Amino acid sequence: MKTTYLKSVRARPLAAALALAGLAVFALQGCGQANSQTAPAAAPAGPPITAATVIERQVNETQEFSGRLEAVERVEIRSRVGGFITDVHFKPGSLVKKGDLLFVIDPRPYQAEAARAEAAAASAQAKASLAKLELARSERLLADKAIAQREFDEKASSVKELDANVRAAQASLEAARLNLAYTRVVAPIGGRVSKAEVTTGNLVDGAVILTSVVSNNPIYASFDGDEDTFLRVGRDAQRGAAVPVKVGLANEAGYPHEGKLEFVDNRLDATTGSVRMRATFDNADNALVPGLFARVQLGGGDATRKSAILISDRAVGTDQNRKFVYVVKADSTAEYRAVTLGPTIDGLRVVRDGIKPGEKIVVNGLQRVHPGAPVSAQVVAMDADLKAGALKLADATITKGK
Image (cartoon, rainbow, N blue to C red; front, top):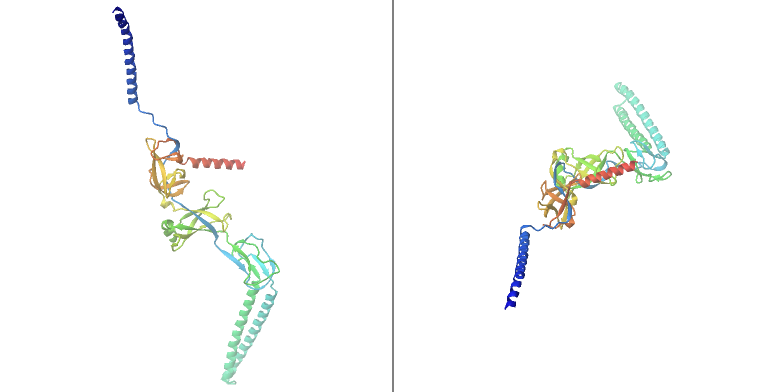
């Protein structure tokens, strides 16, 4: 009995210690659960992307088309008379003025014909003069009744016939002189001449093309506009209002050449939905050459300036036949937005519908974004790429200049 009592007394402190330890563990677990309920879980970080704020500006909307440069005047040079080419008086590809001598055809046969026609005209004139003198004598004789009326009438008729012969001889003389002048083939317009298709010593006639000349200043740029363009500027062009047009060549940046819309066709092609248009450009420096491809930018004048929403083309994605952007919401999640796009102005794309000014959209990292997913956005300027490109171009220009 005494041994059992001692064991129970010794076990009491151990049991109490174990009980206190269990209470401590339970209390710690309870505190951990309470802390886990009160502290929110950390949101997972989204993929890194670059975002920019949608901007709004006053712009003059333009449209871009592909076109071709055309000469205002183009002439195929042919000979008006037949003969042998005796001389070529131009350098292929050179600029010529109106009236400059290009070819010489052997003039000797035409000189002889002109001399014969001149002699025939002089002979006819002499006969007519003699007939007029005889008619004057006949008038006096008729007054004295020394000749019959019939004889006088014959004299008067002869004078009229000889006058007609004089006019015919003069016409033949003019034709002979024209043919003689045509042996000197001159440029009918000013411009740039092609190469000589026929060289010295060849026999030519009116069917042979000797060369060609195209005018160089001013010059046309022809292009096909769409229905929207026709409705926007067609009426202004047809009533003579100035519609600005710019062109740039394949080796040029932007649209450095300025002109004005000169012609809009009177109907749209129902098959293609396009209308033929043409602009005129000054070409004093001969930088524009007929036949070259040209990028055409058609404006609408200062009267058409309006407020527009602008974004970078890099922010636009394609979903089948729709265009979309991702808008970065206040909770740093991405929202899918379908947008309606307009033309490009100063490197930025006009948005007709779908977003508002001040919203942030994803401009880089579009492939890493999903609708409703969180993103880690670094905000930059919408035109940051354009400015960087301009700086690179400036640096390249300076380096090239050195």
